[in-house]
Length: 181
Image (cartoon, rainbow, N blue to C red; front, side):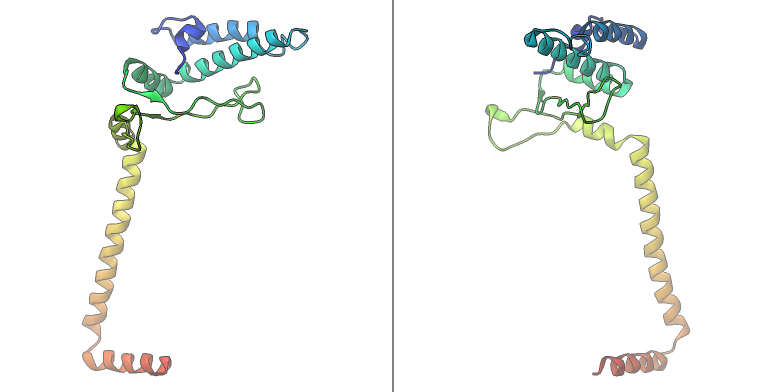
């Protein structure tokens, strides 16, 4: 299940970035694994590390405008389920505290709770396709393909205009002799 990032950090959904950062710092100071490294209670260390990972995950999402908007959208929509949970590893990318984060994906649950059909969030797909970067790449590739098609036709037309039939026949004979036919 998707955790409540606002509840994890103890902030309101309309909290500013500064409030989110301050709440994360309070949680980090309280639950950072280095603070509990000397504790003799392994269970307390593990619980503090779990709370720190949750706070880091919440900060990772809520501190970025795009991720926060997508999270809020998903939070409001009850028709989505999480397909993979966040994965933390001390050796992967870092947020400055030694923990890495891998993005998770979202999909609509299959009808009837099972089966092989998978529905995608067409709204998110449309949003991705209407981003400026995607549209620029699409326009650039369209220009390249159109130019290549135009040049290909133009070169062939120029060849045909400048070479009479007998020259083309002679070139074809040379090519056939080279091929050994």
